[in-house]
Image 1: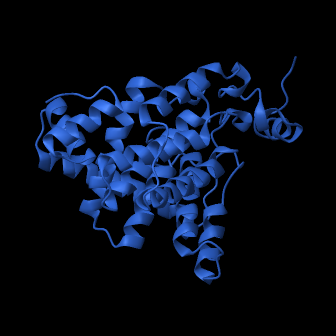
Image 2: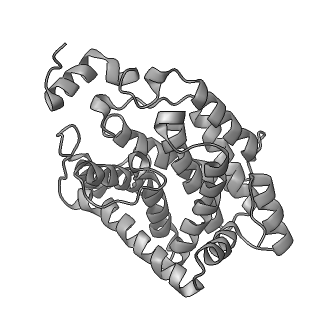
Length: 295
C-alpha cells in the first residue's frame, strides 16, 4: 500500500481508496506487522481495556503518585460529577476525571498506555471513552477511533516529535489532543479532512506550551494539562462537526509546532529548570521529594 508521509498525502490516499483514517491505519498495521485484521483488532481491544482501567481506577478510589505530589483529584472530580450540578455538563466533567485518573495511575507506577507519551497518557483514553459513553458507541467503534488517532499520530511522528524534551508540552499533550480530536471527529461521522482540521486547530491552540515538570516528574502541571488537553479535543471536535474549518492546514500546523518546539529555550523543555518548576513553590516541592541538593 502507499504510505503517507504528510497529512496531504494521507488525505489523497484516503480519497483515492475511499477509506477512512482508521481504515488506512488498519491496512498499514496489517502490512507492517504481517498480521490479520482480527489479530490487530484483538490487540487494540486489549489496549482499550488498559486505557479504561487507567481512566477508572482513580475515580473509584483515591490514587496517589509515589512522590505524593498528585493524587485523589480524579476521585474528587467523580464525586463532584455524581452530584449532577456541574457547570459544563456531565460529559465534560467525566472526561476531566478520566484524564486525571490515568495521570494519577501513571504517577503511582500503575499500568497505562503511553499514547503518545506517559506524560500525556490521560488525554486519548478520556476523550475516546467519554465519546463512547455520550454517543453510545460500542467497543468496536472505539477501537476504530483509536486506529484513526494512530493515523494522525504516524504523520506527527514522521514530521515532528512527541517528546517534551525536544518540543515542549505542545509536542506531548498537544499531539495527544490532536490525535484524540481527529479520532472523535471520525467517530461522529466526519471526513478525514475534518479530522485533520481538528488536529490542526488543536496545534494552533497549544503552540508555545512549555514542558516544565516540577521535580522532573510528569505530575505537576502535567496531570491537569491532561484535563485541558481532553477538553480541548472534545470542544474542537464539536467545532469542526459544526462546519468550522482550519484556515491553516494540518501539515503547516505540525511544522509550526515542531519549529516552535525547537526554538524553545532549554529551560522550557522538560529540564525542570523553568516555568512552574522554577518557581519557589516548585523548587520547594522538589526538595520535599528528593531532599535539598548539596552544592
